[in-house]
Picture 1: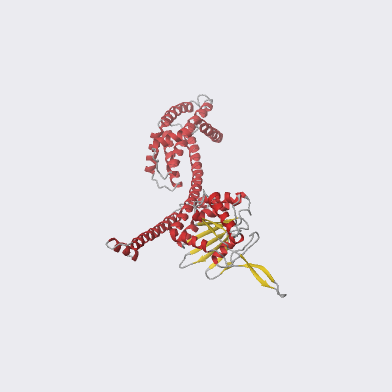
Picture 2: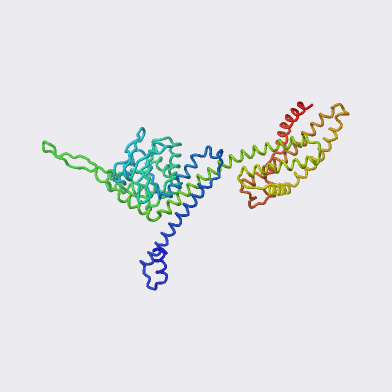
Length: 488
């Protein structure tokens, strides 16, 4: 039993409780729960990455999404905390980050055309491959832990559409957002702040450059921001005032003895922001990182799943179309009624097995037959109609075929017409069976809460049988005419 658990157990059986003991017990429970949440997030994401179940074809085009998931897993396993700074040009984003670091690391001023690659023993500055104007500072801590400070381009440096895309991308990844202003908030800043707030991440509004305002003006601006501008977006606790790169007036005596006032850079007044960041990380810490990572991972996984299902649906539709024509041709060419029905069932079972392999759901031949029976029963009317049509048309087709020698081949034209109609009717049935099977398999071999009858009915109602029948007839006619030209 670890020390934290021992502390809790000792307290539970100790009559001499005091407020410090209770507080310590609560903190121990919170710490244990935080570790459990973090571990659960790691395990969930690791399982997700290791069980994507993608074929080589499905992986093509999904490389970026898969890389995102792998990077998110690395973030959890390396205990990475990410903070991103947003703001307009000239508000001091880079200066705020430099003040937090205590070193001039981030390039101040516009980032266009700037390329930097800096490394040291425990930190390095890199640039985002997708957005070269984004600078990312990585600070290595104990073990594998890291803190990443991300400096973004000014929200007025890039066009609105690109700015929104960049803000959404980074805001979804990071654990804490710093939004830097240097006075009363503009309309553009308010819009950007509102968009970032939608990410649902902890946010700190940093009122920078307070050294440039008299104290009364500074407080008036702060209160206006707090009580009017961002009242619906942020609480007062989420607003801090700093001077990341203050200018201090200093008297300098010149050679002729006269005093001259000069402005020099003073020490950063950044402590309120440091304390606020530490407070958030201490209060939420690993749970915050785990939650943010899993939220973003879930979104990326949705993209992967959607892409995978789109590819599988396209492949499934190709299998269904091929089966429809194969069955239609087989039925049209076969003059024996009983064989017609058996051939159609065999082809439908083969289609179900092919679709099950496509959706990576194991199914035996017996299982495919059982599924076909269940679908046929749920289809009801269309299956009976197919049976009657196949039986009747097959009989008529047989008579026309037998009479061909007596009529000098004149009965071949109506024979062909009946064969096309019979094949097309059978094809429509296979098309419906294929669509139902596809839906069933795409839902992980489950009918869902509605049951097979409801699923089949819904799919049948969505099918345009007349359009499908005409398409099959056209394809079937072309194949049969080619067949008869080659054999007669």
